[in-house]
Image (cartoon, rainbow, N blue to C red; front, side, top):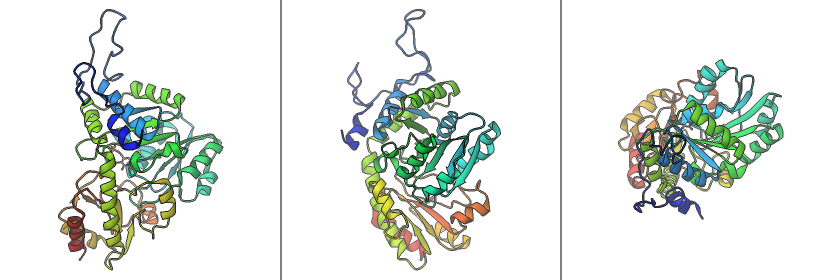
Length: 377
Ligand SMILES: *Cc1c(COP(=O)(O)O)cnc(C)c1O
């Protein structure tokens, strides 16, 4: 079965009792049992919920995992997979990463005895050099937020394999439609489902999948034992969103490509970061591991004053955190999403006061182009 068919059908079979073609919303906390010790297999909704199971089966099929585990947010999903580790373990992370992941690692997980190193993952040798005897996980995000840096998943997965550690990819920006890390050698994929998987800016959720049975068993144990599960309604919305993921990603990507090409040639935009541009330093790698390049673009406007002026002028791009919805958004990473990254590190990565991030929606591209044009001029 090809991707778009899986997205619509796996986990989303017609319901047995009535034939309803959408998965019912099981908004319940518990299930009646026949007698002591005899039940339907459903006991308590933190442990089992049919709507959540359907969404987990669906996402696992889209990513090529053996199972998936849904959580109340992307960060709850990342926190849960970090619980595969123990005090004393070391993790190598990408230095150019979602700010919240950095904050979780440094401000919380470090207190529990985990150690983190941050490296530039554009060169797999940097990752190999950072491996220590206690390294148990390599964690990356690609494309990264907000610099749109690409990690070679195949090459870094080979480093992880040699080092005997787990390879984790945050696939939020690409989605399984554009990129399937498990097929490229990763062991675990995590998503903020709040973004493209949800796709309509109406929920907060996260999910983890793996192609390793032993890891799946441990992740399932953590999901139930630590308990950061999502409510069934969010899972129901995600099942609905999955049905349009392929068409949305095609449109997000074609819109972003046109907007990035416009920005790249505009004299008042100093730099445009988009993996679909031939001028992106890792365009060839992006072409190898992604089928489309997604809807995210970062542009350098040169100063905070310009960033304020341009974002104030944009009409269709709403100034807001988050990304991946059908409506276009604009964000200022330094003041909004990346405040928790130290200034010195931020600037080295290119996350400057003049950097603005566009989440290109699926509106008519001519309207979006006209909006960007009037704002930058
Ligand atoms: C938003 C985001 C997260 C965190 O997800 P939440 O759903 O906000 O908790 C993690 N990684 C990436 C790449 C993100 O964009």
